Image 1 (cartoon, rainbow, N blue to C red):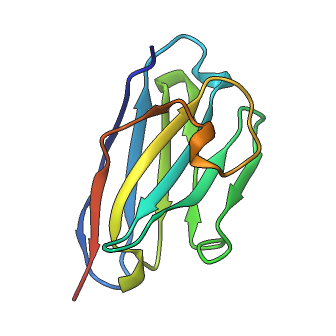
Image 2 (image 1 turned 45 degrees about the vertical axis):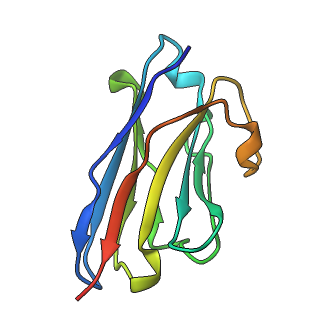
Image 3 (image 1 turned 30 degrees about the vertical axis):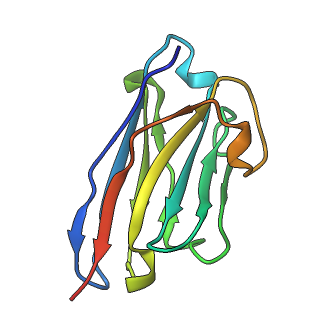
Length: 124
């Protein structure tokens, strides 16, 4: 069983930045696939970004590419979602999802472990 926990959400003005953290238990974190999903008010949860264990192999929702990045620190069992130049439409609950094997997709059904979510509100 892998425990996943997110932190770092909050209120930010449009154009601001925020960094979310996702910490997962286990000794093989460097091999995990880590993804971020977002659920905006009244909408279904959607994929935002993914980091495979292969160094530098990241994939992003097209609308956040160039604005969000997903660095990870395997020594700390932590992955991040760095969000820059935030817009109102980025508001939502952000979830970290982990799969303990390699995965190149964005289907939330294929991620085994989830955090409780952290609220991000972009508002002036």
